[in-house]
Length: 203
Image (cartoon, rainbow, N blue to C red; front, side, top):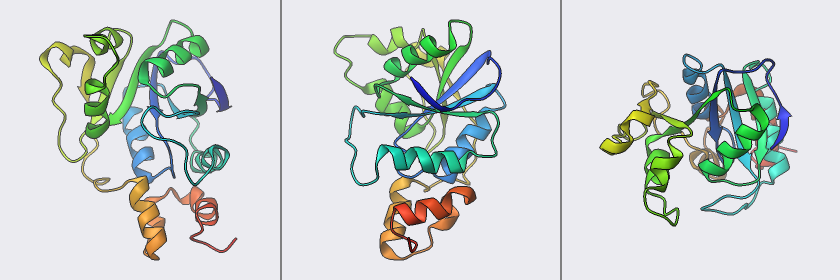
């Protein structure tokens, strides 16, 4: 795991927010800030390789730069690159970086939770064993997520409200391409760089 920004101190409970951040949105920050009620630090992880998509368009370096701008005033947020994109791979890298002491919780929306729980890991009951190593804090996104009974002990709801409903990186890109208002969907400190990199603002 390579850190580009690391919060001070040693967390007892680490929140982990993986994503493609293409670009980072106000919904990402809203999710991370909501989690600070429970966790000491939120680690934004940009995998160098994704399990379900490839890098297209904006480069890894540009995404990291936009993230850095967005989190500039957030002392409890960290940014790192992970070698792998699956949650158990990221968790292993976090253990190597943070040690065995902190609890690990992944932050995600309902759509991501469903994908994670139902992913074909190549062996039965793999997700159950993984959730013995980390938990999921899940925000409602297009509906509330209900985990299978055998996993509910490791899956908790993360109250977020509906202020971020419909906000996504793909919607930002769509609005940019259409010449529509996109700025309100991107954190203020990241708007200038994001606009230049994505071609929505003059270079």
